[in-house]
Image 1 (cartoon, rainbow, N blue to C red):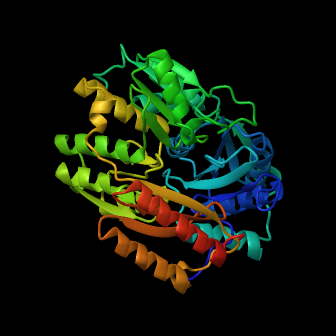
Image 2: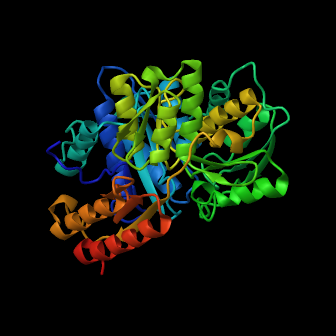
Image 3: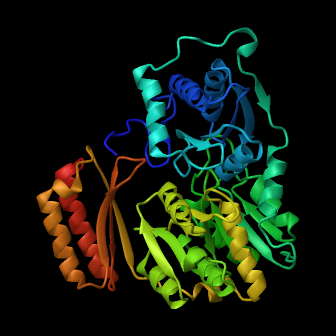
Length: 454
């Protein structure tokens, strides 16, 4: 694409709340933009607005809804609800679009805004550029609705209940979680009510942590970024399995009965292997990203399947799935998309699919996870002043080639920029942990000189 986005990263617009671009003024403009773009027919239009538990959510929610209503579109407020829940409500209620006010796994002082289309899918780059055109180039229509044409705001009172029922229906009706003790860490975020309710209603004994949001404790030493916490809860409570969900509820990490952490690659390995056995994995293909461990690719091949890789970002995974008719994909970070059930990553549904494998097999999670052997992998982040094209930095390109020679074809090395933060991420995978750590540190030192803060 020739045009470059100014506002949107890989997962919506993000920043420090109340500082540009994450201001009430910008939220109002984005609300006006999505409402304007959504008005395709001569009828009453509706847009769903949801959020996580951040303090700044109140401010941005009010501004967003004001912008939507100012364009003659009704705003349907669902309050704190996981990102996938908002996608589901948008599609279920036949709304014209959905808005999520959340910065996902970021600390509470940050916030973000992302959009869903009426079918519950994240917007393509072309539509995000259209929104930016509205915001920056003042393509604001001269006529503004007045009198009875101004939009109304409604609260969807039963949004949580709708989503709980939806999530439970992705678990086989002939199975229950009776006899299982499940620990879950909800990151003091959007899933703090729904996740424990889903597991409990399916019969599990639930140990809940991270379920007391205060507005400033979302993701604070808890949730998917700190899965060791739910691992500790598993060991202390004697739970059979643990799940750590992130602040907006679309990611899930897990721990086995011993508290050992297992990431999204393990989740995909287990679920894809089961689906291959059942003949349920479309085209025998799993979609993942360049970040996934080579061990995942080997596990899928051993089970009789294939794996294709995309750029980092669950939206790119979904695009690849939709383009070729695949039904399972995800990221090492815990975004896993079960397209037979939902349109985006969903931490609760991901946990339910793993629980289905545990119940059906009668095996412990540690046994199921043995389907995949992980290669040592190192990730180093470098803060950058400017996101220069890595391909146009000769010294960095030489260092990358030298690293590939050292790996002797038994590993991978690449650098990419974060789509949501001023970071360059160096990833090296190989047979020897000490060797790849040294290589990553050397690359990081070089990158700091080229694009970092020194």
